Amino acid sequence: MGLVTLSVVSIIIFSSMELLPGDFGQAVLGQAATEETVAAFRRELGLDQSAVMRYGQWISAALQGDLGTSFSGRNASGVDRSREVIDLVVPRLRNTLFLASVAALIAVPLALILGITTALFRNSIYDRSVNIGTLTTISFPEFFVAYILILFLSSLYPVFPSLANVDSDTQFSERFYRTALPALTLTLVIVAHMMRMTRAAIINLLASPYIQMARLSGATPTEVIIKHALPNAWAPIATVIAFNLAYLVVGVVVVEVVFVYPGIGQLMVDAVSSRDIPVVQACALIFAMTYILLNLLADIIGIVTNPRLLHPK
Amino acid sequence: MSQKQNTYSAVDEVGAVTEQRTFLKRILIDLRKAPYTARFGILIIFIYITVALFAPILSPYGEAEVFPEPYAAWSSTHVFGTDQIGRDIFSRMIYGARNTVGIAVATTVLAFLIGGVLGLAAAINRSYLDQFLSRTVDVLMAIPSLIFALVLLSIFGSTVTNLILIIAVLDSTRVFRLTRAVSLNVVVMDYVEAARLRGEGLGWIMRREILPNILPPLIAEFGLRFCFVFLTIAALSFLGVGIQPPTADWGSMVRENASLIMFAQYDIKAGLTPLLPAAAIALLTVAINFVVDWFLHKTSGLRDEI
Image (cartoon, rainbow over all chains, first blue to last red):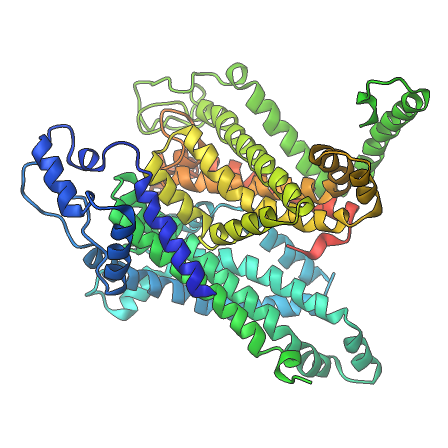
């Protein structure tokens, strides 16, 4: 099912190139290009072939790791300074994965603890204050959170650098230090979502009759949570986590731009502004793939950890 | 709803009058009972609407009027100073309310028109149409919407019309799902069956039989969708691919003045300038969330659902 969705998505991303108004070669090479250059360029890209054939070539090349050649750096004078998309994408993808995993490592345990405790002490002052806090963070645009953090932690009290420019030579500790602010921003944004959804899931569970039964049979609150509620809660919680990691994929774009972090999100935004279609396609494909895989993972975890589905009658 | 009939009916007339009165009264009573968060939200939304409507009267300078001093400090002539090419930030904030909020409202309305009509049609006519629409929506929702919007904007170019159309279509998928889900529960009711047997058309069943019954969740969804659209547009403008200059817009204003934030140590007001438009966005979304929360709480027990 995931594979089917993925291939349909790749078709959509590919055919979006077909929708480009005007002549593609002309648009890339500029007004000064002669008819012959445009024709040669079209031949080079294979634009004189049918769309179905080109899709086949594109997808098979993409599967072998060849995502095409970027348009930027190409011009009509004949000097070719363009770079392979794969060379642009890979180092940046590594940076983005680093940032996302740091954020996820902090956010997931924090959100789970907050979600479970607020569900337990429902309607207490603790629950209410956490709720108001997360509700406001949800309503804030990512860049607002990011700039508030910059204002306090980088401008007024210079603790962390506001620009997170890392490259492949950066030491691990240095890299960690520089990505602190973007990671913190992402953490704040997804903790709010994750915590609210965990809380809702647990509250739903605590309302079910067997929890009441366990309570009436004299089990202590800890026993009720660990032995009765949690086994059934893993499925919704796993869904929540995967859903939010997928959300992380999107949030990363804005955060990378704020902190000038050399990740794949910034690459994509730059490519969109300069209408560098092969790069946009490659980035979109990677983002969509991650998103679909995470959602698929959530479904699988949901099935595997569900006690009712593990013991068929 | 019943006063639009062509035929005269005394019962209808009396019914309409009482209905209207109680409706107004109900709103007033509800407002008095509303928690202070909801009242605060309503007040904020009202202020935003006023500012957006009367932007040219309220703002001291024009939207794209350039003054000789770029990055001017806060003063009596320029309340929040000027931006990187010397435009008055306060005036641009006010015009930004009109542009950003206006575009977001237009997008949400369009998304609801597309998603709502298709969702209702799919729920009523559960044949190949339903299958086709649902599978299309599944595929569209498999791509993160911000990423999809970026791809489409890179292809069609960043104009306001494109922005509205692209985000409306992407967002209508979620409206479609919700409308279809809630109206599936209504479609099986006997009175819908009766209307169908009476020979009413698709349009009548949609508008008169089903729509009034699924309105509360849809209105709440409208608020939440609006927040989402608003944040998406702000994010896109912030990334530089949304609303294009010289049109004043909160998202791009944050980006344009972002460098000022590093001067906060020397002049706290300068450091706050880029945060003002962002705070304006945040305040409106918080206000709408408060109102929607209260509305959901009032109409059903949906409060803890996100």
